Length: 488
Image (cartoon, one colour):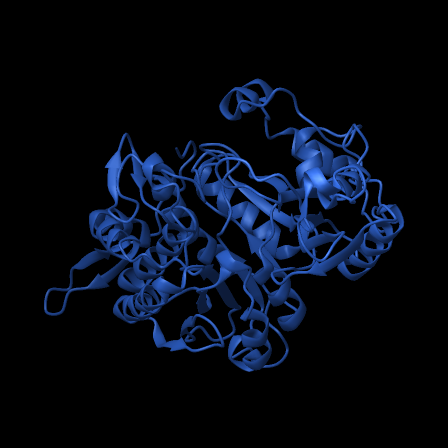
């Protein structure tokens, strides 16, 4: 909790006819008064099963968008709109009445992951329950709970003062969990609407409970399907075993050539352009403890594996990776079916870091697979949708330093500057198309079980997060980020 709380801002009004004054509430006091109401609003939002990847939930995704737009209007935002795309819609709202103040674009996503396996949930995933200081539900941390933190901070400012310290533009997309396939087209066609001086994203977490974090870099992602064929049909393993080539064997040989036993990627030119970690980055990464024994016990891992010469945090945040995500082919049903399959396939993903070029990595992988494949096999590498480039903002950027000051005042400790091993495709899109710096500051715990059964939101972290966003708007309102042209 807050170790060195700052005094609340005070204001007063004259009561007509009395000449006396009465203190106006601060945004922090409004947060205290509306805590239960805010939780009820979040609970209602979480009940909508907005699973973007499953067609049977398309109406639920739309319902969640409508619900959020109505809520934005209710708290005092203006121009709330559900904007259609070629896929699921984007929700937009704004408040633009702070002259000579920065305009901040706030990004989040209202879609959620599937809930499978359902039998591992201790309570229904779309029936939120409070348990041991946690709010359990799908989307509670990723990302509906963090959207709620923002709308409740906005409401607190508007109810307390009738205004905001900055101009705000809110967007929430409905396809982040499926790789944001239509978000780039949306941003490209709405550049004027979305024009801003800075972007704030809360789709990440704290370093540990009570220890805030600012993510200044994300790994990019390129995703492939590798298909290996050796015949035009399955063959009888008795009649042709020993002469017919086996695609599963060929696929295994290709995969074995991708990395050495220590985990270093063997694809030539794969590491070209990788930005080396600075001493300060390594110092910041070392501030975040990684408990190897706990990790191994929690996930039943026999030993860590990865590129030598780097700590676990350095590998996941500052180094690229290549992983096989799935393998299939041949007979997999019950009983026996003695065949030599005609084909086998695998999914492969590469996480990229600044300043790698996704197209160059794709070309290098394609060329290498053509070289190492067995002569008896045909190999086809197809790049899949849902890719994006790496993103980074310099630690000393005024936006990130303002975020640092705001978080430190609320938490009582300086945030750690870290990168993320994951990808948020929308951040790369916003950075490229709108040319604005991004601040990534989230408020959920590392063990919130996002994407897994029993996803949860730590309510104490949620509460301090609401205060942190109130303070963030206060801090950004004093920052000189405004463009020369009218940002609206």
